[in-house]
Image (cartoon, rainbow, N blue to C red; front, side, top):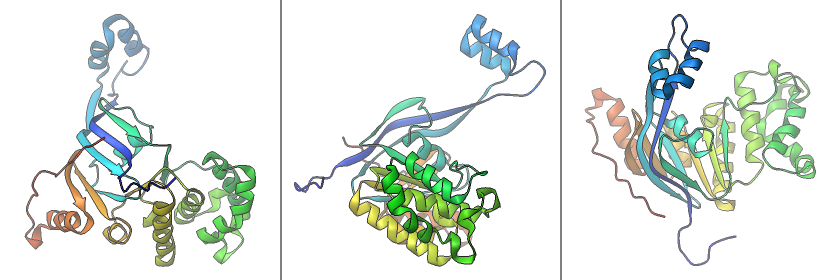
Length: 278
């Protein structure tokens, strides 16, 4: 239901969030029954030390609020915490500290999203649609549009072949097409627009704009700054797990591009402007 009061409606609130990975070490007896017994006898911290568990602080004290109708880009160098933060918003990773609130159900779309390689593209469209919350009738009604949008059949009848015969780009386009066939409260896209030719990217960007109008917020993680510019009106820049900037797309990308291009005379930006509101 559209808001007629003019008040902005929050869809995602990330409040002072830390996300920590625990990585098991290697060595004789570590990460096995010995470590399990240690957890029982000596408690978690002692067992982690005994098993050589290493902590990776992937996201550090991140806070922001997203609003209905926004398309927000997440940028940063490799290992900066973008995908980790997206998974946490989707409810797939726990937070070490802080809280995440969402309005409605977040849906995560990534190039590694699980479809079944031994099933045909056609079957995966039906199963994927059901997994996204569509009814069987809705999947049947939208099937041709999903296949047409993906472009899978432009060079042959690939939709009737097993997914294992697809290139990575074809599989990613099909995943995006399935997810984009449904309106979402919060749609989280991880590098989906980096695949396919420019024609598919344009169709994807147009569909994201439609999703913004029909539903809630869209988050896009991408290393393609042009896709971010064409799709998003706001950008969050993460670096080494910290939120460095939060602001208008052009402003943040300009600072990020200067930072990643030292030859251009870029300097390290000031701390992010972050406003958290309920």
